[in-house]
Length: 164
Image (tube, rainbow, N blue to C red; front, side):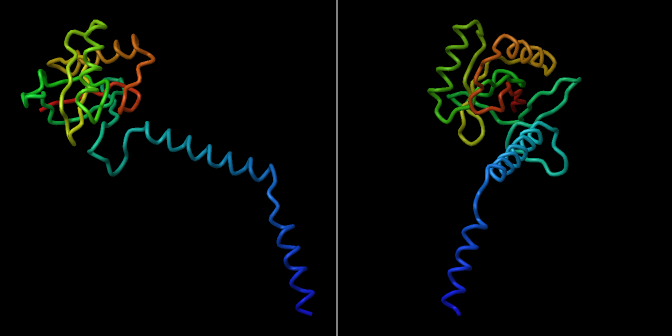
């Protein structure tokens, strides 16, 4: 009896586990919806607990901007040139940040510099200002004139840094 029962159970097992295109499509759609929902959540202003180790999306006077508060220093440990900085790239090596700043200087950004930030990361700064309002304008202008800029290490947008 057992000899007859085992082959029947094995046959039923293989017949019942046959994947179908409909099953694959349902799994793909579920994964796609989950990925899109996660992307939307990243762009929403934070609710509840907030992380303080990266740029935060803020709405300032109707503009959505990323803001970071950090200690920023030059290569020779001097303070940042202004309290408000417009970061357009983050690198682990100072040579990459320096090269990016030099390209920006050649492209017409005379104030472009590279500064050391938290966790030994090097930031490429395209511009800086004494007030947030003037830097918001600079950020908007940079985004409009450089729509295909890669923003290495940043959330696909310039980040305004409040340096101290």
